[in-house]
Image 1 (tube, one colour):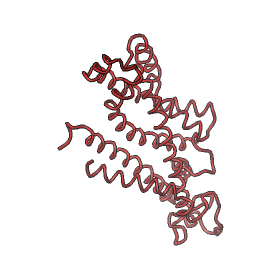
Image 2 (cartoon, helix red, strand yellow; image 1 turned 120 degrees about the vertical axis):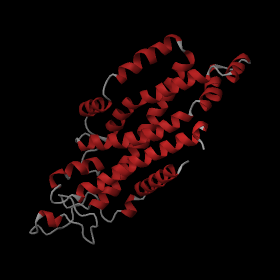
Image 3 (cartoon, one colour; image 1 turned 135 degrees about the vertical axis):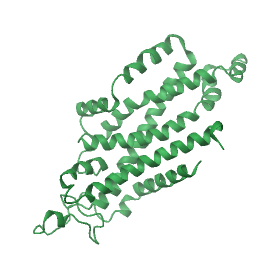
Image 4 (cartoon, one colour; image 1 turned 90 degrees about the vertical axis):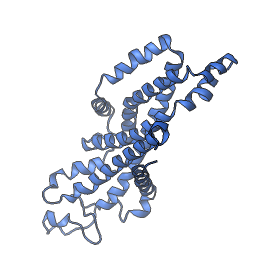
Amino acid sequence: MNRLGIIGLIIITVFFLVALAAPMLAPYDPRTQLPTDNNLPTSTRLQPTRSNPFGLDDLGRDVLSRVIYGARISMRVGVTVVSISAFIGLVIGAISGFYGGWIDRFFAGFLFNVFMSFPSLLLAIAMVAFLGPSLGNLILALSVIGWVGYARLVRGQVLKVREFDFVTAARALGAADLRLIVRHILPNAIQPLIVQASLGMAGAVLSEASLSFLGLGVPPPTPSWGAMLNDARSYLSVAPHLLLFPGLAVMLTVMAFNFVGDGLREWLDPKQKR
């Protein structure tokens, strides 16, 4: 893996460790309103101090604690959405590419095009707005719109690998379809899926932040980076740090997953190895 990929992997590891150890790392409860001097102007009350290095939000909650706990939501959404989407896409793509015929025409010619005809983020907004904002509905919406990309990728790889000589030889020896797919085709077709999954994590984190920014993510008072950005909009002129810290968290996470995806692409593709 190249240098940027290693840097991205380190950043992702740090965020996962922060998410796992949030109760030990956060100095305060992210939902507790800390006592403040209401006689002070708003711009002064929100500023970083020694006891609150990231400052306080408009309700007097510690921003550092909320950023730390917000990592839990983003990492959970990223891992869960990619796992569900990749599994569904792997199964459907493998079936469509291996059997072909009317099965492939139904999936690749009809179902894929139906899902891809809708703007993904608008479809997610519509689903969450209909089902109601919650973490489960958010994961469901992002999984529903995310599996198609994995399915198309796996289908293309299976169409190529199924024509290789070792697959033909295994079929001639009487190997069952399930054995052909699991033991011979998928191990040689799954490498691009790994790269796509790492890039999909970045998309899932960014989509979660976008929906939370619109008020369609995790309901308050649960901390979320996107919701923190939305709450801080009104204080951009007097307390820009309220947008800076959750914005940096989103940027670093998305950038790190993209670095890892590019590094995996170079590492797994012999043509790109130096």
